[in-house]
Length: 127
Image 1: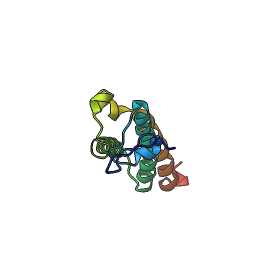
Image 2 (image 1 turned 90 degrees about the horizontal axis):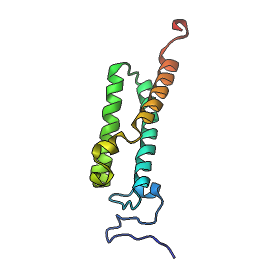
Image 3 (image 1 turned 135 degrees about the vertical axis):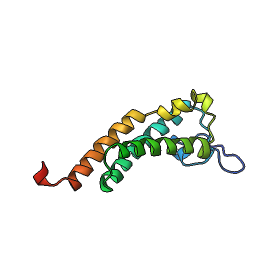
Image 4 (image 1 turned 45 degrees about the vertical axis):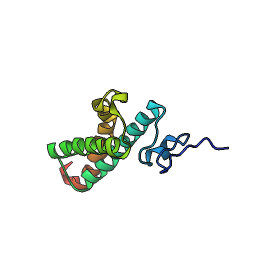
């Protein structure tokens, strides 16, 4: 017997793994830590993906940093408020959700961006 419970519209997924619930709109998050874990790992993946794009483009300098912060914060904000419709006060406010995993995501982004950019756009003669 399954412990899954879905609402009439199929949008609630109690008992599912956090990763399945992460891709279902308006999913129930009975454990707050699971939702914060999803936010944390989404940011890590986003940091590496954006680092790859920024390195390939070749963005550099302050513009790349500001764009990363803006895209990273905007994606999380839209995901939390529009896709999951989370009451941010349960998690300490939007600022607490926005900063969840940001610094490690930023570190992964920087490492990826620097390696890709250096490998593709800096010639051997300039090293």
